[in-house]
Amino acid sequence: MPKSKKDRAKKRSFDQFSKTFQLILYSQPKHLAIIAFYLVLATTITLGTWSFVSIVNKSYSVNGEIRHLNPDISISPTFAFEFKRHIAHMGQYVKRGDTLFEYISTDGKIISFKSQVSGLVSKNDELKQGIVYKPFTEVLSIKSEEKDIAVQLNLPSNLLNKIRTGNRVVYHFNFSFGPKKEKIEGTIIGEAIMIDNQYVVESNIDGNSLKFLDEQKIKLIEGMPLTAEIVIGKERLISRFLGVSL
Image 1 (cartoon, rainbow, N blue to C red):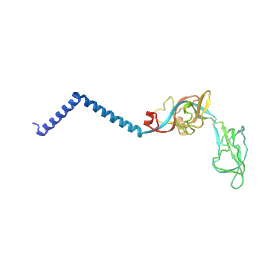
Image 2: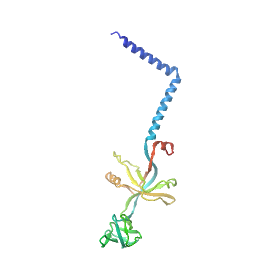
Image 3: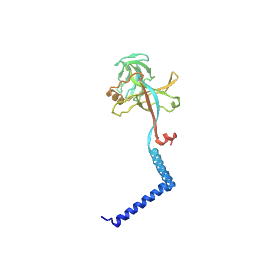
Image 4: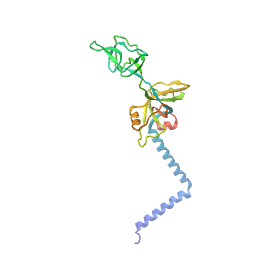
């Protein structure tokens, strides 16, 4: 079937475009350079905009290991109370259910506060009689017999002024957890101290993370190595690339 004038016009237009494109591509290299320049510029602008608006964790990676510690448990009533006197004193061993101190109730009765754990009294706070203290006021501390799983992290000296109690921590182990992608997280629980010429800080592992590890039949052994990502805030992705704060 003979082609219509319209079809022939389209073919001529396409042939003309093809020849023009080939002319630019092969006969005039400067046009190719211009095209490449604009492609690079557009890519740079796109990546720059994306990295500027993207917010990521500002964190530091350090090495550490699993430790099993006897934690100091703060005895802090959840209610307001009028302190009477200490019954358990520093260095004394107490059992679960022993009286730790006495306080006066709102109706004037003397009530004994019982221990929920067994261990050594590690600190007595100097509270005064006749004063009503706020809820969560610490009365004493007990070093529990039950060992808690903690993590000892090694800190370089340049991080000492950046890491604070309460910073979030994401742990990375030298083994996988199978198909489930679960973060093992915790919190910095103390200030950095010097041990054998090395600054160390302790952190815990969240209850949900411990539950997940238990479900995966993973036992955390004393001295097990790991790396930890200590999160101290948020930053723009471009700040991480450039190494400056924006």
